[in-house]
Image 1: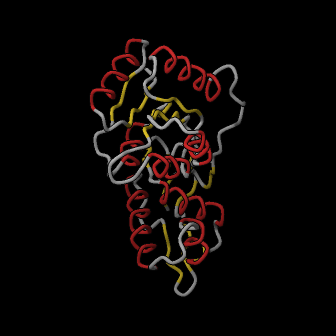
Image 2 (image 1 turned 135 degrees about the vertical axis):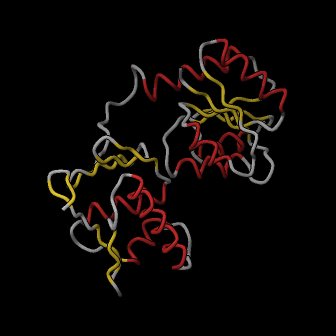
Image 3 (image 1 turned 120 degrees about the vertical axis):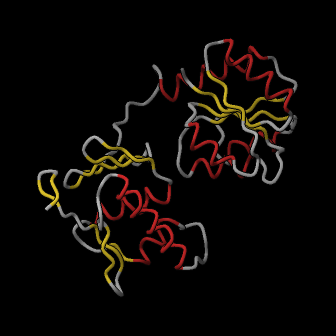
Length: 235
């Protein structure tokens, strides 16, 4: 059952949309942690997002930009704002469509089905999924997944970016500065300790797949993927 995520701080509207979405055979995921929409999105992995503009903590534009860094999931803004500039802002910040309140639920459903067809159905562009493979390791960047043998572990966007660099550079070293620029290219300065924390998480993901000491620290240079098995067996 395809999941539709609803981000709307008016609970009555959110539940009304949710009931209508489920009436048409979709599963509604109603967000309630407005300070951590991205976490809910990653956990739900919805096929489409209905997103209000006026939200607590950060507005819908902000959350759409964050989601666009790691997903091409269709986003339909729903807002009481009716100005042309609001619609322009929605599209400029990564939205695919815009619906004004008050809305008719049949219009919402028609737009949902249209966007799903464009993204995944008969009108979708046929693009092969990327996969990076090295010595039995398979990284699926769009899925945020790493596989080894019959095991799979879920990744965050930062972990995926780090692993992508390690696999692309293997068996060479991925420089610390290169990793910082790849992962946090929208920030002017990042404490290098943040990279250390993320590398610790990357090592933990490898351990979840049964791979120990998979990342080697090269002093003064960066990190290197250290593959210690042949034919899928550890040496």
